[in-house]
Length: 313
Image (cartoon, rainbow, N blue to C red):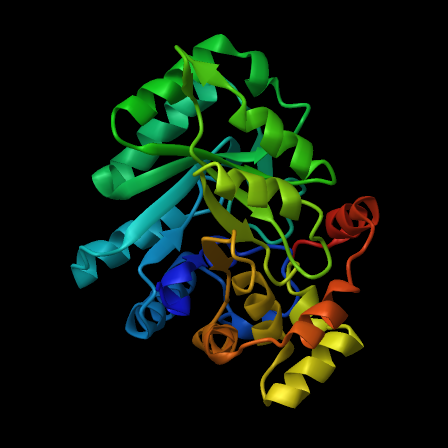
C-alpha cells in the first residue's frame, strides 16, 4: 500500500513568482520578494519536502521562475529520485512585479506548445515525466487543433506522459471531452490535474471515472487557494480541533481520502506551512467527519466567481 506522503506532490505556484492569489501567503514569504530571496525560500521548502519524503514537484511555465528554481535545486542537491511535472499554455508576463496589471496570458496553440516545451527542456531536460496542458476548459481550441494534438501525441510516443489540468465550473465536461481525444487510434492524454477540494468537489465523478479507466489523477488547489486554511468553515475547524491539528491538514486529508486521487498537490509558501499541510498524512477522517465536510460544497459557479475575485498580492 502506498503511504500518504507518496501521494503528495509539492507545487511551486506560490513560490516561483512574487505575486499570487493564495490567502495566507504574504506573511509566509520573505519581506523583500526579489529573485534571490524567492529562490532561497523555494530551496528551503524543497529541502524540507524532500526530507519529509516528498518525491514529486509540480511546476509550470507560468509560475514565474519555478522551473528555473527547481532546476537549480536539483543540480545543487544532486537528487535523482525526484519526479517532475510541468505545464504549458500560460506565459508569465508579470515581469516580477507585484503590481503588474496582467500576470499571465493563456494560449493553447501548437506554436505555444513548441515554444514552451523547448523552454522547459532547456531548464529541466529529461527530468520532466509529465507535461500538462495548463487550465484546459471546454471552450479551448485544443480539441479541434489537429497539429497541436499530433504534437502532443508525438511527445507521448517519445516517453513523456501527456496530461492536462482543468479549471472552471465545467471541469467535468472538460475532463470527459479531453480523455475522448485520440490520434491514430491512441488516447492523447493519460493524466489529469483538476481542482477538487471541500468547497469545490464537482469534478469528483469525472475524476473517479478517469481513475477507473487507468488514467493518472492529480488534485490541485486542495486548500481552495488558502480559503480552507485562512477562512476555514466551522465544520473544518471543528474536525481540526477534534484531531489537534490545523484546518489545512483536514482539507488535505479530505483529498487523500478519495480513492481515485492518486496525487494531492500542495502549495505551501514556507517550511512552516509545509509542515502544517503534511500533518494530513497522520489524519484519518471518520465516516461521520467526511459526511459533515461534504456538506460544505459550494455551487461551482459561485466558487469560481469567488476565485476570480481574489487579488494577486
